[in-house]
Image (tube, rainbow, N blue to C red; front, top):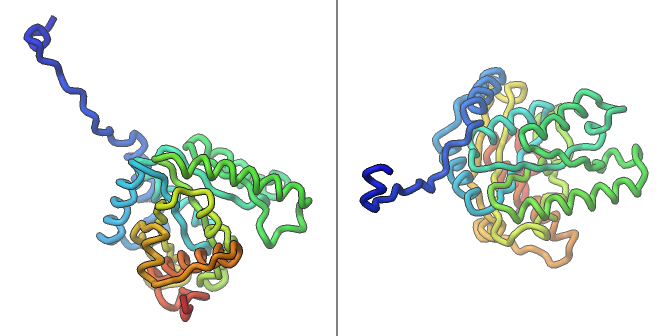
Length: 267
C-alpha cells in the first residue's frame, strides 16, 4: 500500500474530458482540405463560434447547416466538424437516395456507408427533384426512418445533425437557392432550445476570397428575437418560414453577390 493511501489520502480522478483521440488526424485532414481549396485561415470569430458550439455539445445536441454548391461540401464540412467539434461523438444527416443507390452512384454509395467508421450515419432520402425515380411508398418509408433516427439523435447530448437546407447544389453560380422546408420541420422533433450552427462555404470558383465562415450557434427563439420575426401557426408555412430565417442568417456570412435568393430577402 502506498504512503498516500495508508494516510487516508485518496487521489482525485479528474472528471475533465480528455481530448478526442481523433483530433490530431482530423486537424491534419482539415488543413489538407483547406489548403487544396485555397481557403483563407478561419477567422478568430469563426474559431470562437466553433468553441461555443463545442461547449454546447457537452450538454445537448447541435444542428449544423451549410450552403450547397459542390460535391466538395461534404468533405469540407466533415473535416471541419471532426477537427473542431471534438465533444461530438455521433453524427447523422440526410443524403440523397440517388447517391446512396449502388445502381446509380456506386462510388458515393460506398463512401456514404464507409462514413459509419467515423460514427457518421447518412440516412437516405428521396429529394424533391428525384421523385419519379422511386415508388411513393419507398419515399414514405425513408421519411419515417429519418424522423425516427433524427428524434433519437437530437435528444442526446454530444450529437451533431448535419443538413444542407437547399436540398440540391447550385453549381452554376454558387449563389444560395431558397431553402426547402425540411430544416424547419426539425422543430417538431428537437428540444425547444437546440442551437443551429450556420457554416458558409465559398469556393475559389465563385469568389476571389475563398473561405469557410462559421456563424454563432443560436436557438430558434434567439433568432426570432434578433430578426423580430413572427412565426405562423400553420405547419407548412411555419416550416418554410423557419427554413428561410435560418438560411437568411447563413447568407449574411457570405459575400453579397453570392447570397442569391436571400440577397434582397424581406425576412
